Image 1 (cartoon, rainbow, N blue to C red):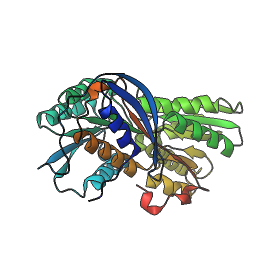
Image 2: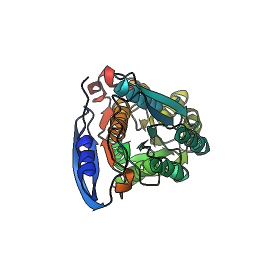
Image 3: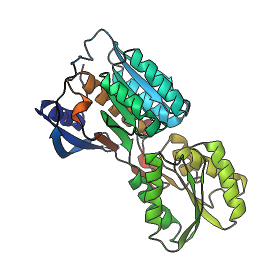
Amino acid sequence: MKKKILAFVLAAMMIIGCTGCTIQKTVRVDPKGRSTAAAGEAVGGVSNKVKKDPYTADEIKIAYVAHDIGTPNNQAWLEGIKRECASWDNIKIGEFDGQSSAETQVRLMNDIINQGYDAIIIQCSDGTALAESVAQAEEAGIPVITLNLDADTVHSALVMAVDYDAGRMAADKMAEQLGGKGKIGIIQGVPGLHRTDNLEQGFRETIANYPGIEIVEAQSASFEKEKAITVMNSFLQSHSDLAGVFCINDAMAEGAALAAESAGKSGKLCIWGADGEKDALAMIENGQMSGTIYTNSWDEGSTAAKIALLMIGSEYSYNVLTETPQVIMEPIVATKETVGEIAPEDRW
């Protein structure tokens, strides 16, 4: 069976083959699945992990620990992981629902470590709260690959969509659609998470380049569509002249669009999200949303699985790292003019 290979494989092989040193790598994967690697610094350290061939071993167990397994993003990552491993009957995927709770994820991580899983793929509900669990897994020889929401400790890899740049791109396109003027709001995710904070920072710092645009409201809806409907209704009641809203994820943008529709303003407000889930793409096509920053989450999950299998099948150990290697998935700016470029089979 043919094995798919990313540039990350070459990067990791350089780490494994470097006597007494590591090479920090950032790999960028574009929406078509192509990838490039950029080298960083070399530092001291050696690997002592025992190699295990994931393709010939009796059983390989990979744990997927979702922030909330019911959300489109978490489902798309899981599907990508399953697709990558589907060709090998001996590779088993364990699915675990964190229920949007760091405490639940910590408990799940403890169970997974005790059950002797070979690798863990996780979206951390709280990077600080999960740091100790991630370190414990790595110390036990279990490589940990984080998705989008990282852990505050060095570990095998982080696979993520762009964050600061996503906010920047959304701000520039939103400003263009607004003609450089108007009052806007921000519907935030959960404060303190690196990705969401960086998204908002990228948006705020870029929108500041347009003096005719004023941010008049900012409120969290915790990534949830229903909460975003409530927040958007509040924005509309406080600002009858609101021109638009930027939402940190698509679920909240969809909620904002539904609130606008209920207020008789469907298609009259500039509503942006970030993620690129298929329901948001459909809303863009229908004129209910103005745009989103699309990432192929199936590819993101598949990439995490590739890295996990590579780490399982090597003598690599996280002890050789001083920073967590990153794989950055390249985005597409999706508007009504460009959303048709995203093929049906790439919509998650």
